[in-house]
Length: 338
Image: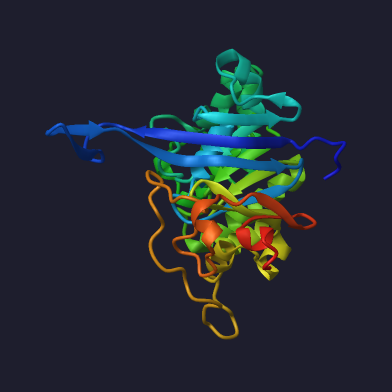
């Protein structure tokens, strides 16, 4: 990316914490002989910084619960950030709400994970796909209907399906409808949050290819959230690896698959079996992922890391440039041991 051309999306130091309501998950502590309920906080995002260039697909990967979906929903505006900044082009939008945010809602749209719960079962497809245009005051009823039928055709569905209800479609067809809805206002950035995880394997490739076709036709930029590494390799141009609310490595897709640098990335990618040997490349990490309520000190991966050093236990590693286009947050590289 040229330094003179700003990225389409820039996130800097993004933090998102969720308070846990008093109840089952609260700690019980003794103070002056009395039992006291102590409120807790889920540290979902802990200082995430990334950029997405216009026209590229950045894949966000990591284990379940690492903060991928929270990052996606915070960028799109469904969650207000606790702190940090979000730029869309040259405009900071992280703190915008209501009418001030609305112009950017048209430009940033989302495809949700579960096509069975993300479509209103009481609405016809024409109303579901046409709602974004209605909300943003675009065109007449007749023009909206024409646009809906055009979008249904582009995502591989019959235009006559506009009069049907979501329960009349399969999972793959519903996700196509979700894609059509995301494209209704002609967005520039589309955030796809696990868009194929709820679908049959036979349908997943079709949806991935549809997303790539739509990107080429409409010049879209994608933030593609997934734990499916084979899908990530197929669709993305860059990959960002997340662990416990932090980005630990970012690199071009082919580079990171050929030689993952961070210990967590290597262990994550060891889940990809070798086709010629049908075995995993490395052993999996020991232990469970720590809870985001009580984050480890220092590097969050150090309790499971096979290369742990003493600084890892106390100091959070800074993100450094390990090679052109490659960024990694690991004491191994900061200390020169790698």
